[in-house]
Length: 319
Ligand code: ACO
Image 1 (spheres, rainbow, N blue to C red):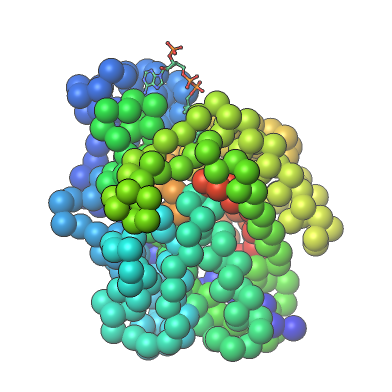
Image 2 (tube, rainbow, N blue to C red):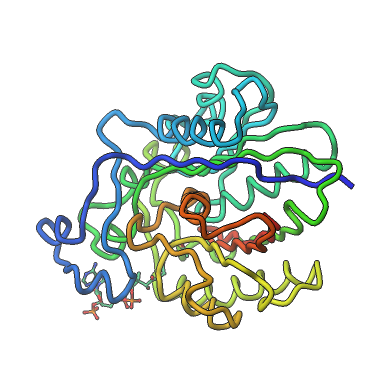
């Protein structure tokens, strides 16, 4: 049986750090409000001229190094992003050219759930046998699509990139990507969206969101998705070593962990330092848990995320 193993991970965060205090100097908000409602303390913003593909390429090099591979070893690149450098070509092909390699490269667009969609898409390619090694990147420059006049959204997001390398393995033992599930329901598309786009306005637009509505849907849909993915493998939530969730809001993360009966010390949380980096948030959190030694070989990990559309899903991995 072929399974996809994660054999390396990497990350990149832009140098510029923006604290809640920095924001409260230019916007009618406060450090206390942001921390109490979201758990966010700071975020990184890309420098002028620093592009999503630059963040993605830096994370890719870091992941390649950790896997002991070169770009020539990769035959599939998928970039999850809703802040591409250009409308086309895809950011994945730009990354491919920056890395100097060949194979197939394309983007997926599922906002905050983009990384899980990319992971699950690559997993299907690898298990079908047509590809051997895949580079999956979640990369965003959300600072370019948040409205500096809108305190309801401006304080929530940050920039960054995280990447993993997957390898098709014929004898995986009990390791690898065990199960994924993805759903979408476009009837919710007016709850979280950008008010522009190439066809609509000829601009990228700014994020608009009905926060309370998104909050409620996030908890119910993500708990259902987590239970569905666990049920595929007859695994109980209590057996998980780590929940490595999308990092939008500490209250959403805590509510989901509680419903899954997971104590807070089994959740990798980075929202305080990174804010919501959309498709980059899960691989950034994963890298953090791996690099600080919390995530160990054999550990059972669950990812979950929801994003605009809505698109939502989860992935179960034996590290
Ligand atoms: N600073 C100070 N006050 C603010 C701010 C701010 N940055 N933003 C909103 N407020 C005010 C509002 O104007 C409102 O004031 P009013 O009562 O006088 O009208 C008050 O705070 C409460 O606003 P709500 O929007 O009702 O606050 P809520 O408790 O719902 O928190 C939040 C808002 C943090 C956005 C929350 O709804 C949330 O996290 N929702 C999930 C959305 C999310 O994370 N989306 C990311 C993409 S999807 C995903 O990743 C899951």
